[in-house]
Amino acid sequence: MSDTTVIIPVREMHQFDEGALHDYLKAHVEDFKGPLTVKQFQGGQSNPTFLLETPARDYVMRKKPPGTLLPSAHAVDREYRVISALRDTNVPVPKTYCLCEDPDVIGTAFYVMEKIDGRVLTDPALAGLTPADRSAIYDSMNDALAKMHNVDVDAVGLEDFGRKGGYLARQVSRWTKQYRASQTHELEGMENLIKWLPDNLPGNDESTIVHGDFRLGNLILHPTEPRVLAILDWELATIGHPLSDLAYNCMAYHYMHPVNGGLVGRNLEELGIPSEQTYIDAYCKRTGRDGIDNWGFYIAFSLFRVTAIVQGVYKRGLDGNASSVVGEEYVKYAKMVADLGWSYAEKQR
Image (cartoon, rainbow, N blue to C red; front, top):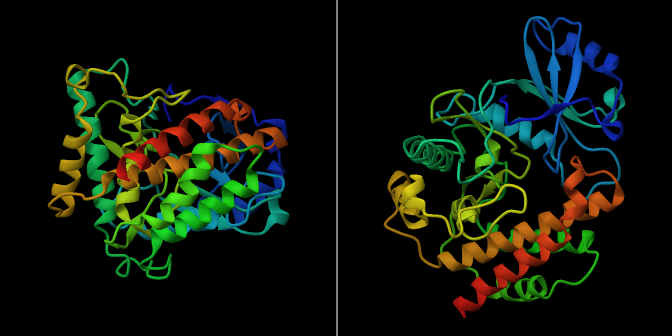
């Protein structure tokens, strides 16, 4: 993918029968020919991702992690379906080759897609790039998000990919349950958000494809040009409220990620990165909006979701099945994000 993506030997906890995988791909992927060499992409907290090398071409495989998993989590089948459905739209996605839901093949369900050569950059400040390239990358990211939200879900066969309407209420309920299932200690900020969010849902209700984890690190950029080639990691995708995606995409404006950093306190004009409001305005223009009401709610909601996700990563790290070794370092991160989310909620009161 790029020199910013670390490729390692398959971690011991994620090893599987590579011979069985080879035989499956030979039977189900057109023109597949071995020998097959399997390596793993380092990083990522959810579905382990692997580089499959063959003499003719390379592939990427995403699979469920081993061990006991939370209900409805790690839905590689849904990832495969939405990427496949969007292939003939203007939304940048990889080509998909096959989905295997039979755990007897390599131990868990998996799918295989094309490997797109490019850059995966996780630092929102885009260190080392020019201001012009930073500006263009943010504009291309904004464009990719708007294109996804502008897709007619019925026209691409995703009318039953999720329920239309009521998304935010369902998400609050879902992530509360996910958080409780992985809770190891009490976070006051999270407890406050769990009580506040259901009573303060915005009145406007919209339904589009939502990615659920739309951020810079889940995009493949062109190897040399400042533009998005593909959106990755569709595990949380469904039919939902598009402003939840936009708010999540804007998280870098609100806090510093312990690994990837953020934009808080940075001179955005000097960097060539748009302000949050400029970024929002560009999205609104691309999606035909006059503006956004209750923006603080969507930020609080996104931080609530981040807290639940981070808590899950921490719990999987304790259990020994997180797909990255940083999982166990996330306990302080969860508290910070929960408290920040509650601070935004209090401003709305």
